[in-house]
Image (cartoon, rainbow, N blue to C red; front, side, top):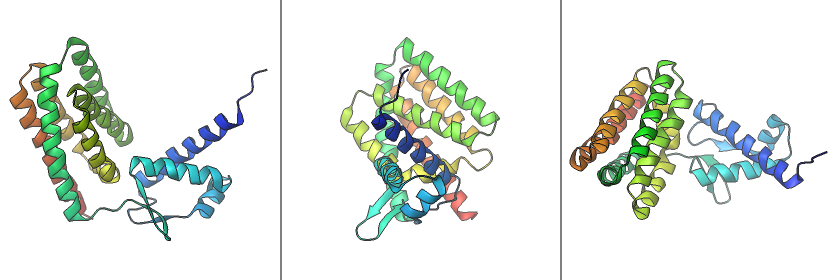
Length: 221
């Protein structure tokens, strides 16, 4: 009989709880600025505080929550000014990465992008915001990898970590997934054709359009 090592079981539990907490945050049950109470979460999840603490550590690593000394851990909160500044910087780095990707793209990359774009289209048609967002993250990630610039990739990831909650909720609005994926297609087409200038332009426009959609969503609340 095969037994699962206790350490593996504990790690799996913590990751499972981290995923549940992430979905609760994305769904709006825990909002930006809310404090995560270990004891209350342990009671809710039916576990001890150890796995909760580890799950929160995992989420801290993604940038979705942030610790505040002597106060606890809170769902990440970003001011409007910070959001605008981060989006401007993301646009510059993503445009650079898309231009480089256009210089490095191969047939295997094209096939991989096509499959991912199709998956995003299916998610948009089914109104599955969670699935769309995960595919969306992968799309951006592949372009950063294809840029072959580790420093740009690291910089972009640091910006993304600060915006996960806001970007994910952006796709809850009707039509935003479809509009986003139309922009993805334009970026991919430029990369696929090796047109670095257009890839850079469309990538920067995509990030700025995402910012506009996010601000419109905030105004509606």
